[in-house]
Image (tube, helix red, strand yellow):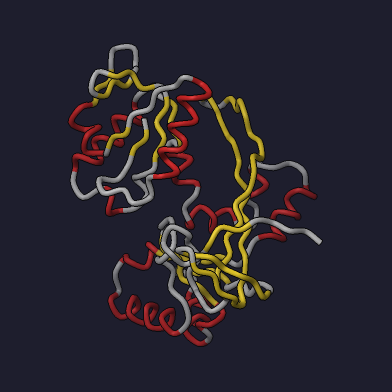
Length: 266
């Protein structure tokens, strides 16, 4: 079952996955919104999730990543129902939360990686990849970000492009949060801004190409499967390269800020 948004505009790669599963593996897929899962779903006595009379073995979330996906209690009930079932979740709620900026910030704290890794060389290599990550509870970092906002990015606990805060907007948002004296600042973290190398490139969008100066971001796909505490699979399984014009702060492909690219090593 693919969990989708009610008005899904990013559907074509989803249909491609369904077609491959059907043609290569004879696996049937259904598409349901969170509201439909709440209305049509139930857990059978043996733990199986049944939706509209269909037994579900795997749940693939293409919705449920933003607050807008949970406008009422119906959507939350659907998420809880799926998590309580024996169906394999992609991702499970724990794996979903691990991807939040707050967890990244916690992993960057001294002594935390040592809880998960034993090899000191591996820990050092990982730490070398980390940018600075701070909570807004750190008054010294907040002061520095107000003084030099161009060196920082404010990030909410959100997926996809269009949500980060840059430049003078960082200063204005921090001052606004300080004045409000609310708990809203817990929704953000501050991150050291990265300044990657810029190169000349050709970009194609909507059938039109143009030359520009661009920067690229490489993401590595992983395949991870576990049953409770037993890890069954944990492997590297490909990459995604996104390229955007260097003047753009945001970088989401579906959000319209970047294009898909490939690696050319020299």
